Image (cartoon, rainbow, N blue to C red; front, side):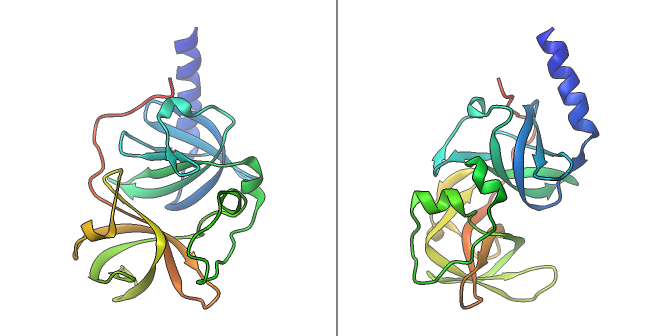
Length: 208
């Protein structure tokens, strides 16, 4: 009976549309067989794949997939790989976060408290590109639409290589990266997360 119920949920998830690349905030409906289904506030459910390299966290602490429960409030950063939606990161957030607007951040605030992180989502912009120049404070990308896109690196910018935490020093020129960021009060782009590396293939996780 349990397997039948899980199979039914998975079939329903396959009927949902794939999430577009970017940030998806909503309620977790399903996490099963390498597939997530998330229902945004006031919208239709969307689906996206995940694997062992998907970074799952709460309050900046990594979680295992069995920590997820249906009905949890989540925020996913999604990308496209092999023509399908792929979940780069999945963050468990307080329910109030889903209705909160994205906040612009002052460049004078190098760090944020956990309370503010819970209220205001970290960044409302996502984009991909190839690193053409870098320094300790600036990242310059070549994207599909811009030959040069300058992004400021913050003291609390987080870096992930193939799903594992790393440092800015490990990011090489000519690496393709996925960036999650936002604009500060001076309208400069700031990076909150910079992600790169290989995505796992056949290996997947299930919610139980």
